Structures are given as C-alpha cells and as structure tokens.
Length: 89
Length: 200
Image (cartoon, chains in turn yellow, orange):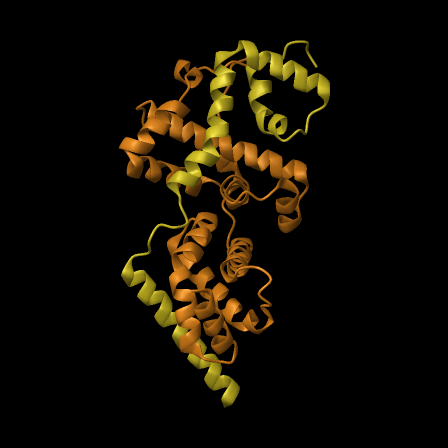
C-alpha cells in the first residue's frame, strides 16, 4: 500500500471504513485523506446521507391507491375461499 | 385497539376469512411498500404480497403474540419478497459497472462536479421537489441488479445488520459490504446528477 491513498482507493472503501472492516493502518491513511480531500468528504457525506434520504422518500407508510387495495383484497379472499373449499371438499 | 386485534387474530386463526381480511387490510400499505422496495416492480410486489398474506394466514395459529402482529407479519412479507427475488430471472450484474464512478490514472474523478457536495442540496430538494427526487431515487434503485438492491434496502432502509443480511442471503459479510457500497455509489451518482441539474 502506498503511503497516501488515492481518491479512488478511498472512495472504493468508504463503506468498509464505516463498517469497521479495515485494518488500523488503512483506517488512519483513509481518515487522513478524508481530512484534507474535499471531493472524498463530499462522497462520504453523500453515502451517509443516503439512508436518511431513502427512508424519507420511500416511506413504507405511503397510502395505497384504493383500486390496488381492492384488487389485493379480492385476490386474497378468492384464494382463502378456494383453500377453504379444498380443505372441506 | 389491541383487544380488537387480538379478537381478529383469534377469529382468523379459527378459520374466519373475513376476520383475516379485516386484520390485514390496515397494514397493506406497510406490507406492500416494504416488498416493493425489495423487488422494484409493482406486479411482482403484488404477487409476493399475495404469497406473504397466504403465509401469514397459514402460520397465524402459531403466532404466540410475543412480538406485535405487524412486526411478525412484516418479516413474513420481507421473506416472501426475498424468495421471489431469488426465483426470478436475475438482472445482469455487468450493467452495474456503467453506473459506478470512473477515475483517471491518478485515481481522481474526471468530472469537476463529482467533487461537489450534493447531499445538502438533496435535503433542500426534499422540501421543495420531493416527488421528483423520489422518482429519481426509485429509478436509481430499480436500475440496480437484484443482488445489490436487496442489500441496499435491507441495510440502509430496513436497518438490518451486515451479519443478518449475509446469513439471510447466504453470502459472506465482505460480499454484502461490497454490494452495499456499489449500490450506494450508483444511487449517489444518479442523485448527484439530478441535484446538479444534469441528465442522468
């Protein structure tokens, strides 16, 4: 490993860095690079923002359109009634 | 509310289909959207949701009430999505390379705007142009190969830990980290392009 890692090397290992999956010498080299490199700082901040943005944008609590709910429920009831008649028949 | 839910669970467990419908209907948005995030395709999500609902119905008599009904049922939905994901034709992984950043010989990003911080602007878009940003986020997710999208969703949206994802997908933790990183970088590229006003 070179003494000073390149932006590519740092950016390719930012998730490993966050996950504590790198040996200490590389952690130190990457952290030092991040201190002085605005491009890598921006990429790192961007990666860390993704879960927050993703959760805000793709909420599980968005309502379902009524026609989709009706379709899902109708299909479910049909399957349950079919299952029921198989068990009793 | 809880008493009513327990009553519905008891009746549904005893074979009352209408009670089962009443039990699951309020939770359909949660179940559907968690499946859709993993599969990316609305038609596939409806199929997986049907499988999940039938699984919930089948296993309901074994539900002991140690966790909340929604948490228990939600896990069944996530598993149904993962099952369908495994069984459908895999999207080609090679397409991934084109979505990752490129570097010059000295390991620097070629495009100047790649060095700009996009995340602060994205947070501003969250307030003013939420729908458009959501469209780009969904498109970025849907462009990922299944193997990468699943990892991103489970880790960054569902808050699973890396070991749990590795065990569920039967891959090494290092592979989970690598897929997660590539997924994050690809999504970031797409959102950066949008936020900085360039066509992705």
